[in-house]
Structures are given as C-alpha cells and as structure tokens.
Amino acid sequence: MPKYIDIHAHTNFKAYEEDRDMVVSRALDDDTWLINIGTQYDTSKKAVEMTHEYGEGVYATIGLHPIHTTASYHDEAELGDDGKEFTSRGEIFDKEKYRELAREGKVVGIGECGLDYYHLSEDSIEKQKVAFIAQIELANELGLPLMLHVRNHSTDKTHNAYFDVYELIKKYSTIDGIKGVSHFFAGNVEDMKRFLEIGVYISFAGPITYKPKPEICDYEAVIKATPIDMILADTDSPYVAPVPHRGTRNEPIYIKDIVAKIAQIKGLNEEEVASQIVLNAKRLFDI
Image (tube, rainbow, N blue to C red; front, side, top):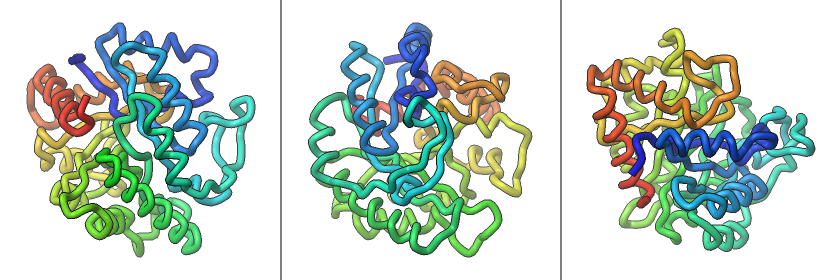
C-alpha cells in the first residue's frame, strides 16, 4: 500500500489536458495513490479509461454530480469543449449506462453524488434528490460505497443538505446498510456524528489549511471530534489547493499537506495519521 491516498481528485478533467500523465505520475512516484471522480457520464468514462493506463494506484468512481442534474453554468476546469466555460446539459441519471461503465475498469465507488444547495431552487433540489436516490440504489446493487458531495447555501440556513443526505441514505440504503464518504466535509459536529452513525467516513480537503472561518465550518472542532479510523483526505483537484500551494492548480501530490494539518489538529504523529488514512481507504473502497 502507498504512503498517501487522495480519495477524491479530478485529473480526468480538462484542466489536466496538457500534462495529465505528468501529474498522475508525479503522485505515483511520490508513493501517493488517487481516485478520480466522475461528475457526469463523460467525466466518469474518462476516469474509468484512466484506470487502464496505470498498473496500480489509479482508481475511479462513476456518478452524476448534483449540479449536473439541471442546466447550469460551470467553469473552465471541468470537462468541456476545449476546456472553456460551458453550460451543463442537465443530465438525467441513466442507471443502465452507469451499470455498464462500472464493469469496465477499477471502479471503487458511485458518485460524486448527493445534494448541493449552494444555488437554492426547489425545482433543482427535487431533480438532485431523484438522481441521488437512483445512485444510492445502484450502489446498493453493485455493493459499492457512495462518494458524497454535500454543500449548503452560504447564508440561507433553512435547508441542511447534510441532514437531507443522511435521511435519504437511511431511507433508501439496503437492509445491510451502505457505506460511503462525505468528501470536502464542511458541516458541523452534529452533521459529522450523523454520518458516522450510518457508516459514512469524513474526508477533509484543502480549506482545513486556510485561515479559520468558524462561521462557515469549525474544522478544528470537527477534526478533533472525528475518530481517526473514520477520517479520509482529498484534494478535490484541480480546486482548493492547500497551503502552501493555495492559488495554484491543485494536484493529488499535495494530499500530504492536508494529512499533515489533520495530524497537527489532532495532536498525532503525521506518519501514523497517513498510515491510518490509507488503511481507512483500503477498508472503505476494498483496494
């Protein structure tokens, strides 16, 4: 097993079109494995294709991101024509197409899926829920964990995406339950504890290295309260690079900076934390 693992990266995106192999190889050479995450069918397919290009250490999840369930604007970093800005076509989750895709490579999870309330719209929320439920059902069927994307509105607190995701997983997972991970966690301690209750791991990303903003998320309190055997780490590359790389395009190799911050906050040895996170990932994703 590697020293580090980035459980949520997007080196399958257009942001890496010019130097994708260099970025992936740089991580692998540094004893860092990665899981590329699908956000719609095209990016999911690319993530799966990449698992065939490397003998070990590159895995994929496949799924439909909640923001891609409706037509909406997205930035140049995601898969789009010539890597430019684009508008999502509003994909409807096709369970059969994704089921077939799961058979084509080292697919270790379903997602990223979940609920995103950053742009609140009741119509959008309902479409997100329909797609999320379908992906829970597919994960149940295939025996794969969920890669969860959960985001609240920046100011409107009338909706809690974390609670709604928790409720839907409880309602639609099989009798044996379903495991998963909430990547880029930005909820509170209560949200974290609810997720642990249903077997969902908590993954932390680059913002834990930024200047604290407890009004958005009290990362120190959440990390201290989360058991080390339920913690994972992700870069969400190409976004939110950790300090000291903030402001640049993120890469899986920077996962070590996030792991170091987790160790610092929990007052634990960095190597032990890195080793435990790898063990956690192995347990969750069966790799």
